Image (cartoon, rainbow, N blue to C red; front, side):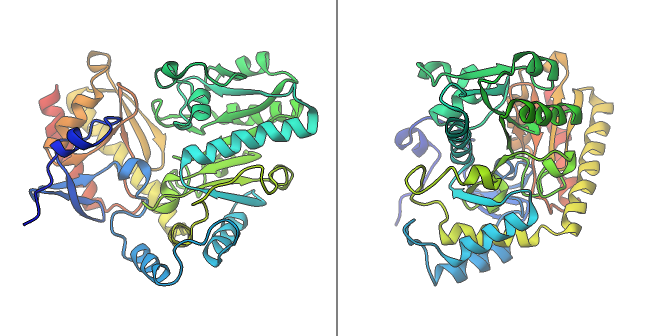
Length: 400
């Protein structure tokens, strides 16, 4: 008989980059997850905004199974039908003229930052290399992206870091205007700061960044790794702001749980990457492309309207819970990316609350030590929301 797998195997065999929960999920359907003991959880985390159409979605599973019987991998010396179909769908639906596929959000941001640097180098010379990013931002875990991310706790131990990166306050257009110069090659910004606390950009801030980039011939990059693929109630958040970037990065929900990343770019930028300038072994994999294409085909107007409606339902639940317990100081976000900031008395204890929620049968996220984050499946049912927030209330009652 096979040896039973237990949580302590993680401590024995895995590099301890993570501190996973004490239970091990083994089965899931929609927005419900079951662990090894059969305990049920309502999932309001969505695999960190990844499972955009829930767990074990039948449409995605069928598309994957069909492609698995045809072609798994062919290498970047060839192209394939699924990736071409996916690229056309993204170009048709967005500002972009071309797409580069990779495997994660970090890889997509790495590609975007490299492309912006090379574009400036080729057009203007080596002096134009500064990248402006924002405090509390998060753009990935490669050495370049963790440097550009505005959270020193993730980068300080890896010095010396790549130079030429400046961090300015988020939503502070004056700070950017006072700093940007002809040496600036790019500004990278999250339309909603995700890991740093679920903080939406002011519309005037993003519009102002577009104006400044045009004035100084700098590239505007939108990191939509977390906000993309329907998460905010539009296909991409830039569409709700009415501000077009030059480059956009996408991942997480794009694959509905299957690993994929994408960099979308306007034609002038895309042409800077020629054979040999950048690459990937697994990017554009037929399996990943097939699943992502199916995800996008299901993100129709009705589903996106449902995202906006579910936003209101979740906010209402949080406000009602807060009226009874006074645990939150603010609720913010767009669509199904929502943050609830803990009141001063409980600051720093967001993880404690999510641990209690798990004990009550609810999976939720944090966005830093002070904010609960909710990023459920875009099609989560109202019944699952009702059940989930009843469980959260039990956790809050124990927490306060």
